[in-house]
Length: 217
Image (cartoon, rainbow, N blue to C red; front, top):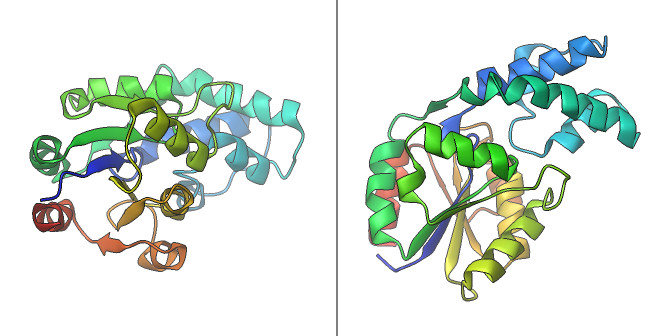
């Protein structure tokens, strides 16, 4: 295996956050007395930053309205929704392998860093990663391309040495913006069509498929 630096998305790639995210979006919309879509529709918003999600669901670009919704979401998420989550089957074994075989492994997520760090620690995954990167609560690094650029610069990763692994088009697009290779995974919330259209270099169905590929990369 080449000694690549591996960047893993969190939601939809390492853990399944659907109950917590859907429940917290629903809570925020209920508090604002806004009609809420069904759970399957809400699940399509897993992955991208919350500001875009609430702009869409509230049909507004009004910053104060969006921030109010985010505040309500975080009110529930910080104490309850954070842990309404589970590690995907096969992910621990995959991480056991790649975290020792790769040059380094990092989490690179659109979830705020504060929460991502707590989730990674709570589910016993922190020993697999050198560091966890995500946006700040004020929205800095909400754009995933900017987040990856920040990670690469902060960690001194040389050009072309890293691979982004995630379940949504945003992961692939951010990788391409930074000259990185990308791997799409299908056990999360993105489809093969979405990942292929975004330009993923490889797409895998299961964590074991991904591990087999990384064994010979």
